[in-house]
View 1 (cartoon, rainbow, N blue to C red):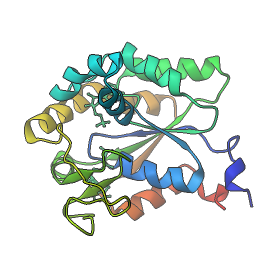
View 2 (view 1 turned 90 degrees about the vertical axis):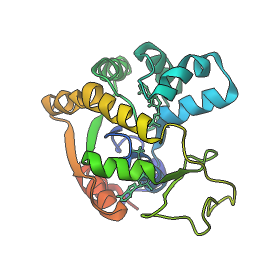
View 3 (view 1 turned 45 degrees about the vertical axis):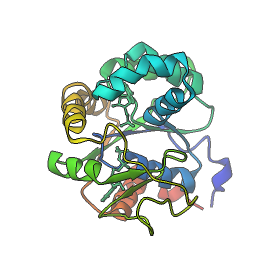
Length: 226
Ligand code: ADP
Ligand code: AMP
């Protein structure tokens, strides 16, 4: 069997595609741990820039507060500067066709195979339910759900014992806007990756465990596991 630490040549780069609340971050944490991916969450990177008060963070702030997308050029530059040599799991990127094309161009320039996209599909009512109940550890990005995956003590992270927060954009008005933005600007990516024959469809309404198993099987990762 292959050894997990030396998989870089065999594990593909993976895009977790899905609406806010579909479970991308949850699955990214699991896959990252099991298969040694480097995870790039553009949402987490942007929140970190905002917390540090960088120029990029200031540029992004008003878009994020309104639930709109941050302009493509800002996002593409940020991802380019973060792209490591090992296999990457993208969470929340790309979100527009222009971002997807930029990522493909970046991989082509580096002679790296184009990434596979896994679409975590979930209906709007369930997305809203998940976002409304989400509690986040702002330090690690780890998420809980008030009903589906509650922490042992309400408002406290099981791992680091620090406070959990409800994200400012997980409010009903902003949730509605973010889901509209997903449907208008990000959903076309499903056809983009389908046309390139590199889309895997996952039913995200299943349990965390079942989604994870479907991803591992769909991406062919099980053969590479320890
Ligand atoms: P995304 O990164 O796609 O926005 P998250 O991974 O943050 O989504 O998940 C959104 C919310 O739904 C979180 O509160 C998380 O605990 C919960 N969640 C994630 N996956 C599932 C699942 N399969 N079943 C039920 N709740 C889930
Ligand atoms: P997320 O944590 O993925 O839900 O992202 C939170 C917010 O960050 C989004 O609502 C956008 O404002 C912004 N954002 C994150 N990723 C992107 C991206 N790839 N393109 C544009 N905006 C993004």
